[in-house]
Length: 101
Image 1: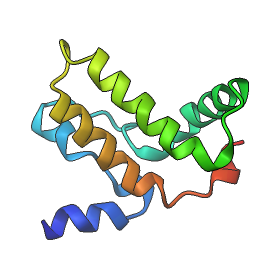
Image 2: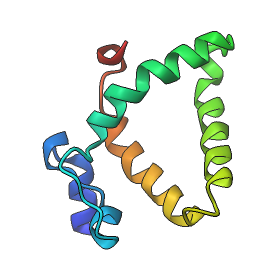
Image 3: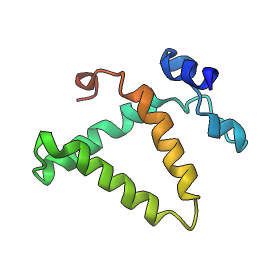
Image 4: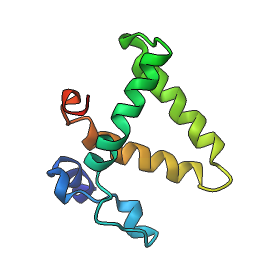
């Protein structure tokens, strides 16, 4: 548990998702920063396209994540998908959103 907590506060270059190791899938680019750098502009533009107010965006993203997990349940265990989402969300919350606009 201690190691898991420390990984969450380490710099982005030192973070690797623990599920990647457990399932033999580990890529050097599997760090939250790379996912955010690619996905943030797409997510922000989708939220703006549908006129989602800033105060409801966290809920909208949560509902979208739930729908994605439900849609992929035949391919990926929902528990593992939720674990991956949470493990990436914790360190991702430490990044400045203005960097990704």
